[in-house]
Image (cartoon, rainbow, N blue to C red; front, side, top):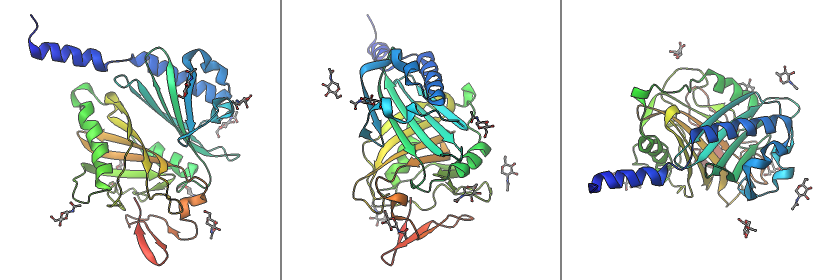
Amino acid sequence: MFSKGLLTAALARTAIAVCDRTFLHDWTALYLSAQTTGNLALLTNTLFPNLTYTEQFTPANISSGIISKPLNITQTRSFLDEYLCTTFTEIVVTDISHPYVIGVRAAGDGKIIHKIETLVTDQGDWLFNATGTAYYNAREKWDIIPLAERDTREVIQAAGDAYFDRFGNINITVPFGTPCARLEGGAYTDASFTNASTCHLGLPSTIKVRDRRYVVDVQYGVVNIYVGFPGLDRASKEPAPDSHLFRVEKGKLRFIHTISTCEGHPGCGLNGTYIPIDGGKKMRVRRRGKPVVLK
Ligand SMILES: *[C@@H]1O[C@H](CO)[C@@H](O)[C@H](O)[C@H]1NC(C)=O
Ligand SMILES: *[C@@H]1O[C@H](CO)[C@@H](O)[C@H](O)[C@H]1NC(C)=O
Ligand SMILES: *[C@@H]1O[C@H](CO)[C@@H](O)[C@H](O)[C@H]1NC(C)=O
Ligand SMILES: *[C@@H]1O[C@H](CO)[C@@H](O)[C@H](O)[C@H]1NC(C)=O
Ligand SMILES: *[C@@H]1O[C@H](CO)[C@@H](O)[C@H](O)[C@H]1NC(C)=O
Ligand SMILES: *[C@@H]1O[C@H](CO)[C@@H](O)[C@H](O)[C@H]1NC(C)=O
Ligand SMILES: *[C@@H]1O[C@H](CO)[C@@H](O)[C@H](O)[C@H]1NC(C)=O
């Protein structure tokens, strides 16, 4: 007879390990080839016939989507979650003919991908500056974490969740590390490279961030969370489509990358009034005479 503990552990393992890392790795590599060449056909055999595809969280036609445009990719980072069978890839394109920062989240079953959600940011999206993204991104270290130093997926995910929970409750303790820096669109909280803990700057405290979708990569200490971000777009009542990528080391947040789109409102209502973050000062914007603290 199985002991209850053993049986539970065995069930938990079979219930959650839904796909092979190699599948996710190979699919991500194929996706990047398809995006580089603008050739969706490369992916055809890997996609569910009735694939769910969205851009900026809105159902879209993948055949005419971003992947149909060949892009000269400057940088990528990919993370794989074999337990949720999800992947997230950050793509930076500095090509002056059309710069982009793109997030690609895919979900499958280990044999086929049934859902792809892309967030395509370019000029007019939240603090967009692909050159800035590439510049700060290249200075950060997101290496594979040695086996003995890895956090559990629960610890990694909890660090990202605490950050978003703090948006709605100022009393939540977020495990900020030192250094900690946040890269949003192209703006950086540690632009003078002080190596200080700067991720806490400019967070809201009255915003409930719901509908979180995760990719947790234990090998890299990374959690990606897709959310609807209410209030980010000052010009809209709708939550802004948003991705946050968190690097966690020994339970502490070290780097955060955001990708947020401004739907129909260039600059998310920040145009003309935005004062860039500088030397650790809080980001502030004046709107209708009232200071608003940004995330
Ligand atoms: C395809 O997917 C859509 C939305 O997910 C669903 O409404 C529809 O019934 C599906 N069609 C088939 C043939 O499975
Ligand atoms: C999707 O886009 C492709 C390429 O532009 C086009 O041929 C096709 O008709 C579109 N499908 C739908 C359902 O609009
Ligand atoms: C891609 O970008 C690199 C660096 O800017 C450049 O050297 C190269 O010529 C570009 N390739 C294409 C095909 O545009
Ligand atoms: C974008 O970022 C680069 C690198 O930090 C900076 O030199 C440039 O001024 C920025 N552009 C804008 C429009 O802010
Ligand atoms: C945060 O803590 C302070 C002091 O204990 C308390 O007055 C306040 O109500 C708390 N706020 C929330 C949102 O829990
Ligand atoms: C910040 O850290 C980097 C990498 O460890 C180091 O090269 C740099 O000198 C540090 N800067 C400061 C101001 O301490
Ligand atoms: C700011 O953007 C809005 C669109 O969201 C536009 O209507 C308005 O003219 C812009 N204002 C300035 C000063 O550019």
